[in-house]
Length: 288
Image 1 (tube, rainbow, N blue to C red):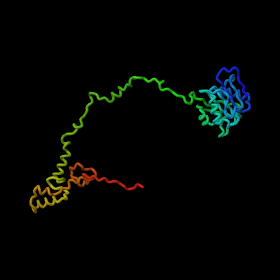
Image 2: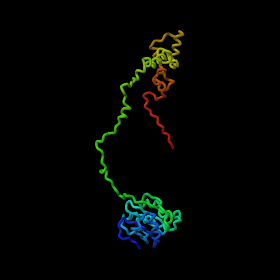
Image 3: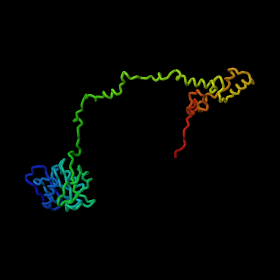
Image 4: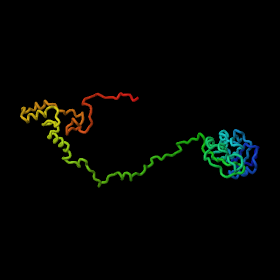
């Protein structure tokens, strides 16, 4: 069943198959194409269906598995082969057959995903054409790390009291020099600018556009009519107390610009709720 070289002087090179035998020409060609040492290669035939090679775990440096049928390399078999290969070792899986023939689609010697699930990495097409091995052989490697590997953070030496990076260039870019002039915003305005708003309101009041000595241009309290009758001599001059009896529309600024004079501070703002109102309107309509 086995052709074991003697003595065994290096990590094991294994050529395994589930077939009853392998021609010497296939063994020689596979050893030459897949990098097996012909002096120490161990040829195993009639490998069990579970893929057990009978070799110690992690003892095989290079393993070539040639199946007699495409369905031999099941996930369970690949897992057993993975256990036999040492970390950093290599494996080649193929199917015996004519070198010019191809494995039918869906009947690959081992699906790439199955090799990955078994724990192999660096999947690639096997190099070289071997007489007696069908096209489509795959090669892979076993990673040097193992499942459950750990790493101690204490092994990393931290640089204590390390000098911070030199950011002098960035600091100079934002630092103001002695020649840089800072401008005071208030210096850009003169007294006329400060008084422009107040002067406009004063002129509007003098023109009768606001509440003051004269009635509003759009008076609705009756004062404009009273002043017109006064000027026409139809009534006596009104005293200050009489003028105060007329109720101006001032105080309705919350209703909107139509109720605001030219100097109103709320001019341009949207209508608001009455002053002192605590009523909150909620939209209780259903969204459904």
